[in-house]
Amino acid sequence: ILFCFSSGVHGDSVTVLQAPEFVSFQKGEWPISGEKIPDLVALTMGFSVQEDLSWPGLQAGPLFQRPRANVLVVVRGVDSLALPQSVASYQLENPVPFTLDSVAETVHSLFAEDTPVVLQLAPSEERLYMLGKANAVFEDLPVTLQQIRARLSQDGSVLASLPLNSLSRNAEADLLFLSEVQVLHDITALLQRHRHLAKDHSPDLYSLELSGLEELSRRYGQDSPQYRDATAILASVLQKFGEDVYGLYGNSAVVEVVTVKSFETPLTRKSRSILQSSQSNADNPYNLAYKYNFNYSVIFNIVLWLMIALALAVIAIAYNLWNMDPGYDSIIYRMTNQKIRMD
Image (cartoon, rainbow, N blue to C red; front, side, top):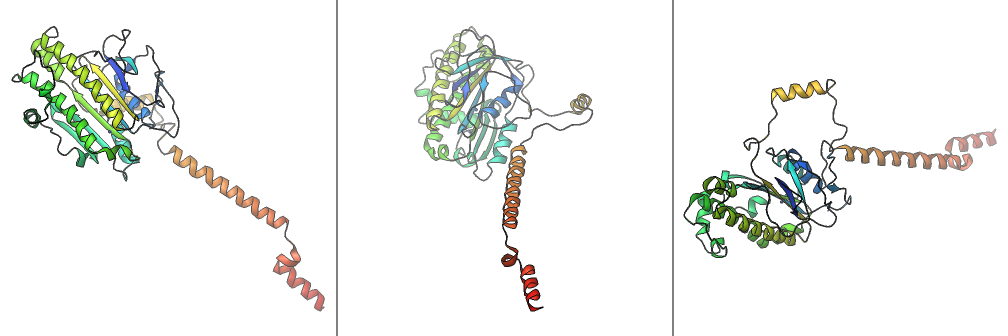
């Protein structure tokens, strides 16, 4: 297993719905760039990042406490949602596409034996990535649009509890939005069924991308009753979703919502091109490594305790040599004394 809304935040926003007390988000007008969202998620989970995040919205927390899960929900097609209860909210600048692949790799590398839950899901694109225990827990989660729409007609569907108002059960855009709401409901239901996930020592990572509002905006327009009803429904559903996940993880989970009107470029996985590599070499002609890497703490502890152990060993040996009685503790002097007496 990734926000508050205030009147001072305009445009695309990052909202922290839930966060434990030891993850300190500061309220203020501090915008954050979209490309820094993965670093923000990594820092909230207690991981190191390659480049320092010089952003005052998140303060350093306790060294030995980290949240059990991070839930990041990206909502496309709206710049903000009326979320009544949240921790903090910040303006999102430079809304470029991003993924949490780097955070997922860190979780997998550090907690490979504990098999943490890593789930990345985008229902509209039928994109799914599961790792660790997620393969067993979410194997019944509907992924394709056909499966999700079939789920809407089954028992326990959200259609029976949601006030659809102007939304239709037959329109394609409306069904896409309702399918994403159903996925949120099913994830919470599966977590409630497998409560043991929140009790292990490995952090879980969830990354969800919802684009149903974007399709409704294209189909009906932002001034349409369908879009307004869907926005109100999604805000209510996300609020409850954050509270449920936060409670399931024992009030030790960070739930974030990123609202983006539209990304500046199509959402694709980031890749490094040859031009980017040559440009980075020009900025760093000596090809110097980063000042800090993930193995720094391991190497530091090995060197530190090895030096302490060697220093204690030298002190103990020197003390014993200083207080040694040559006549009794050394076989050389003992043999010499006997030879002298015989002579």
